[in-house]
Amino acid sequence: MIRPAVRADLPRIFEIRSSVRENRLSDPSRVTERDAAWFVDNAFLWVWEEADAGITGFSGSDPRDGSIWALFVAPGHEGKGIGRALLDRCCNALREAGHKTAVLSTEPGTLAERHYRAAGWTEAGTSPRGDLIFRKAL
View 1 (cartoon, rainbow, N blue to C red):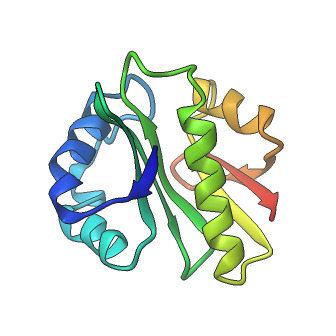
View 2: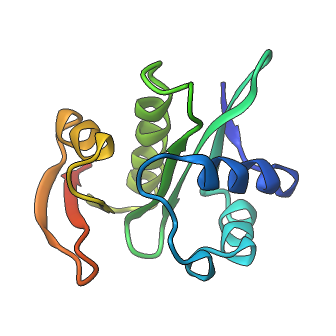
């Protein structure tokens, strides 16, 4: 159900990104289609696709700095293991790229925060924007 994203997936990826209830993208210029295309072209963006529902989640990791760039599941598809599977795929890709540790950030007090803590991520600080920074050994 996980496959590498292709450029034709970008409209659905941005649709999911815009539809989430938490960690909403308040400044769309921070994540552009050009940014996402780089991850597609370099094979570090994945989608979860189901035969009956199409793409219901996506994730991306950045081999340049060892970060999880994105992890989002479409509303109505949460709690099915999609996020965990996509996160594992990101971590595996970072490990394969030579990273020993992965890093990500999320808003405090969200379902995402609880998800990362339950998956063994450790809080490592706060970003200048107030997001929690998490790290995990790979």
